Amino acid sequence: MNDALVYWVVTSEEEIHYIDAIISAYDGLASVRRDFRLKDGEAQYKIYVSPGMEDEFLEVMERLKKTANIERLIRGEPDDVVER
Amino acid sequence: MTWLSADWTASSAVDIDYLALRERGVRALLFDLDRTLGPRRARHLPERAQHLLASLASEGFRIGILSNRRRPKNDPVIEQLAERHALLHTAGKPRRRGYLALLERLDATASEAAMIGDKWITDILGAKRLGMFAIRVRRPIRD
View 1 (cartoon, rainbow over the protein chains, first blue to last red):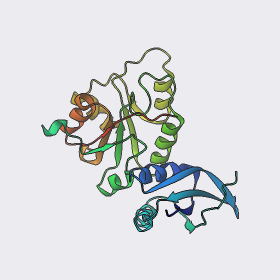
View 2: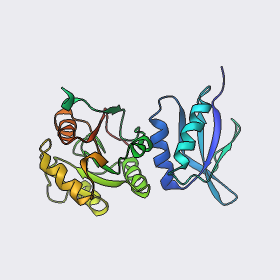
View 3: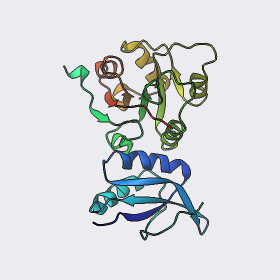
View 4: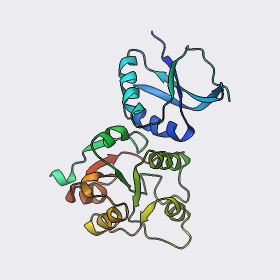
């Protein structure tokens, strides 16, 4: 069984709730964590992407970038740890 | 009957593709209160609902709350929401008057707005009569 992929999104606390609502609208696409890690002065929120859903996830994020303040999207590793 | 058909159905108000709404030209979001933004007659608004509304407002959506809840004295939820958003209680849904009054406050037309609520006979029917986009939610936001 494949593991979920991990992505980190660099955005603000306000934006993450908007992003979460949109991602949640797509059943089984991905799961947004509300806690974050601080790296290089940036808040990075963890998103677990369901196996086989990466292309669809990236497509939604591209659409989101047109309106939401998403600075960067970083592909992570499954064992990346959320630090608080 | 199409007036009782929601355009979309979502698990809750935190499971809606607001981006797709924006792409359809929706600029104003009208939320029902009880059983949509929180449990019925809740005395506080769930934190997730507060965050969602703030987040949507920061994205440029005009936010309105349209509730049939009568305003008892010292209703903390009504007071809290009214501080930040356009709010109309005792709205008389599904009558048109409340929708139109709130749309006017939001400076939006019915075709630029979406109604989000749990009840067919009030939220959805009232919205569809005005030609608004209507989204029915199955459960309230909870903490």
